[in-house]
Length: 393
Image 1 (tube, one colour):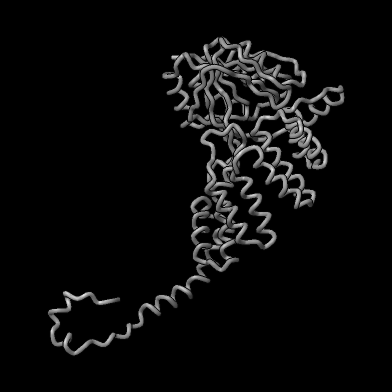
Image 2 (cartoon, helix red, strand yellow):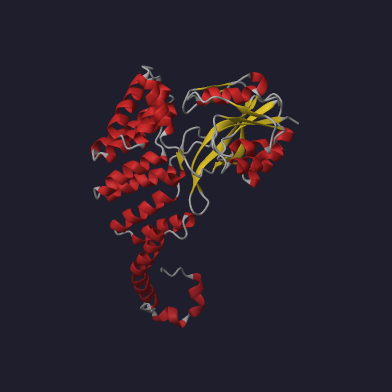
């Protein structure tokens, strides 16, 4: 059985730290907590779980802090989490099972990262991360912001999920770090161009975001998944600025980097839906449901775009096209995902009202007795022969 060190970097996490450690402590042999300058009770909470609590002066560099935490681990494998992450009970059990069965030849284990769920508990946003790595490999974190763990060797894709359960978020922190770096004259590489553009986008600074997304795409050096995502985010920026034709152009440009994704099919479908091109919109929403999704995606996935959302929009499209029965079917499919959604329930009541008179009319027509066809006298006098004859319907 392998041994595992849990590594956390924290700052002012008194409201979530215990929850995080409690959710995973049964599966780890060592807990390493690196504090980067807390002013609340974080450090005392950490000390209740482990003697391995260290201070690290915050230098606006997440990779540096995580690498320091990794340097303090002593187990064969390192598991990293953020303080606002948890393992749900079923995932803890999966981790315990993995711990007892994992081959020591494996260098890195990836896990799903569930970023958000809807009110029904369905995961709506997710990606994958390398979470458990062999310490002897000396893997390093790279990047001051939106850091990533550079790994290689034998990998294993697990079915374990880490759940993000944030209670609060410093929305300005990453943007502040990027702009401090720019102020010092630093030149950004493709990855930083992309993530800085994301921060600008998140802060509704759309014109600037478009500039940096464009620089990222023009570099020709971006990861293909980031290229695709950048097209979608540029589409969002142009849409927010009212440049709807450019929004469509960048949604379509994503096809340059790979096959259509459900998110982009929905974007294009919505563009046509807004213009009353219901048949064309329906084509794209149908495509969102049928286009293959990668089984393991390292990029952010909006699961709504391959489940309930296209069904709900197809209900609208087919209603406008007068195909009420098909509209009803798609609304019922959406209701499987969102049984109490107000829009879905409204559509159900509306379409039942439309379809009921049509159904009643059909049932009445079928109930009327059919006019009997005339029978020849010779046949009527010899009914025993009727069983041998084919009577046309």
